Length: 330
Length: 221
Image (tube, rainbow over all chains, first blue to last red; front, top):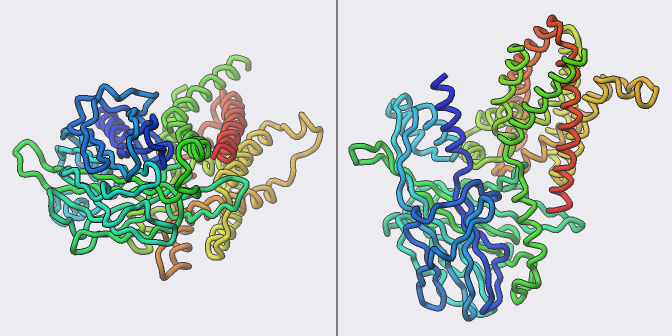
């Protein structure tokens, strides 16, 4: 029973724990109030808020300046952490959040499942190769997420500014110069050095509007709106060439895991994500007002997903209640 | 009482993930060969609650292994046709709409099992074998939509589709074995009638709920 409960807890703890920074719209007007959403769950849905004391760094980069963000500016909306900002002058901006490391202990089987479920296949292969699949793990993990958004019309070079997180994606060109059909080269750095042969999941929510042609690429979308992605590997120089096949919000995600040298740990993982938008089917000079409605409704549709455990518990309760009702009646 | 909840408890882990394209699945497919497609197909079926709810409804209605094999075979033929055909030809539909129709199949089965056609419309229900085949086609189209949501890469396209389909069949068998076993076992219990009604009313409610949920996703998306 203990094993079962432990497995169940581990499963819940490990499910849906990606972190992304998202905006209702990535095209904002200058000097306008805006919100940046910190999703902790999946790309489509946030399952938990993040405590302020977990934040190691919260930064906004724009017009050549890196500005620390006051954590008092964070609020919580249901399960989503929300940062309220006011945009400045026009330019391409970067926002980033880096969390402090945390430790988690896992039984061997739960750990293997997590590696498989989250696509940390290299470490799983290493464990298999070394005959370590039966060994429990104590993992130290931290997450480092970035988003790039456009304010007004003017493009600036802030997208290339590194935030010097342990692991981070840095584009080689401005994502807001891209159109569908272009490619974006992105450098993946780990502790300041290019990270080669690392698995990265690339996906998008490819903008669409019902009533129009549904040009789904269907390479990234899942039924319960878990937009995941295509697995790609970084080249020897740590770069990744991402084909931008459609307009929409794009996301890159990777988990780099190593065996830990510390005595109390077995593994260390650093998680990185990057989000940005390509055109979104709107003219770039349409800022908040113009495309907000479409984007917002799209977001809400994804956010409204019913957590599976609610469905399962609700189903059990419902069948149980119906059974008692019919049994009593008969 | 315990045995009724044993069935529910056994169904619980099948439902935990719901079915969808996860990062792990895409990575598995990207890294693995045909076996990866077989694995993801099986996993998708085992965790796909709408397919399983429909099959639970079908199994409830049947008695005897021969009947079960016959109906499951027809369902398998139906969904294999559209799964392989639609994927190979690149035919697809909006996932919310196809899942909404699949939700209606769950509703339909619960309604039929409770004698809804006779009670409400005063007619006998349509031929079940034919309906299972038709719904099989629809479920297969849903599975195809899901498969097409993966990046299948280049080369060996048909082999990948067939592998996924074989995986779906294996997953279906794996899911059906405990369901058939337990429903057969429960038939001997004096409270089976109450359980039968409870589960089939639940199928109707779940069908309605999933239908509304998918339409909300379609119109809200």
